[in-house]
Structures are given as C-alpha cells and as structure tokens.
Amino acid sequence: MTDDNCVFCKIIAGKIPSKKVHEDELVYAFHDINPWAPIHFLIVPKAHIASMAHVGPEHAALLAHMMTLAPKLAAQAGCGAYPEGGFRIVVNTGAEGGQEVHHLHMHVMGGPRPWYKG
Ligand code: 5GP
Ligand code: ZN
Image 1: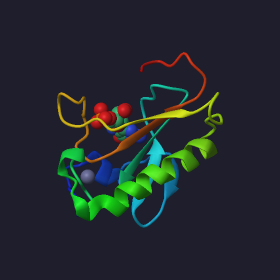
Image 2 (image 1 turned 45 degrees about the vertical axis):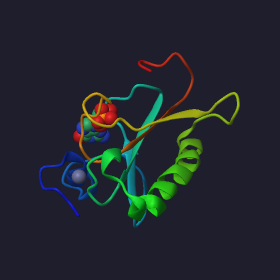
Image 3 (image 1 turned 90 degrees about the vertical axis):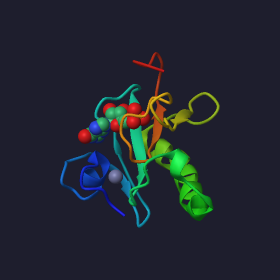
Image 4 (image 1 turned 180 degrees about the horizontal axis):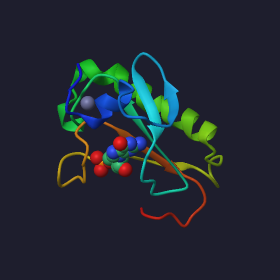
C-alpha cells in the first residue's frame, strides 16, 4: 500500500515535513511546496496509487471522497465563495499529462488572480 521511494508516501508517513491541511483514514492533504496560485494544496490518497490511469471501480468511494472534500477544504483554506471566488481542481496523469510525482494527487488551487501559473 506504500512505496518506499515515493515522495508522497514519505510525506504521509511524516518522513518528509509538510504543511497539513487535512487528514482522515483515506486521505492526507497538504500545501504544495511550489504553489501556482495564492492557495494551492494537494489531496492524496494514503494508499499508494500511481495515477488516475491506475484507478478502477474499487476506488470509486475514495475518488468521491476526494472530490467532495475539495470544496470544503478550499473554503477552509480561504478560497472565495462561488461564483465570484471558486477554485480549480487538476489531476495531472502521465508524462504527457504533466505528472511529475507518481502518487495520485488532486491539485486544488484558488485565491485572487493573477496566478503564477495556470
Ligand atoms: P504533478 O506535476 O505531479 O501533478 O505535481 C506534483 C506537485 O507536487 C508539484 O506541484 C510540486 O510542487 C509538489 N511537490 C513535489 N514535491 C513536494 C514536496 O516534497 N512537498 C510538497 N509539499 N509538495 C511537493
Ligand atoms: Zn506513494
């Protein structure tokens, strides 16, 4: 369920420090070290799943949990209310999808524009 060489598994295990946003049995959320927007955090499953290309029906409840958690955590992190505020959810997948860390993660970005990227 974990990969010893995976940076996000190490973060979840507390072997690499991170700024925690949320934690429960299924997921860990923390601020991105190199934010593209005034608010930028990642939601990652505690189990090592390499990417969105690796999910199946057995992950439906986990993905639903990540998706429904995102708006709640975005609001708590300071994202403005819809429709003037809001946030962006991104899941990069594979090299052509721009994925650099091969542990499934959801980027949640928000805050006043302009953003640094995206
Ligand atoms: P990807 O390109 O794989 O979708 O995004 C990986 C993200 O993880 C990047 O935005 C990068 O800044 C972030 N990241 C990589 N290593 C670390 C780390 O050690 N700590 C934190 N907090 N974020 C990281
Ligand atoms: Zn991992």
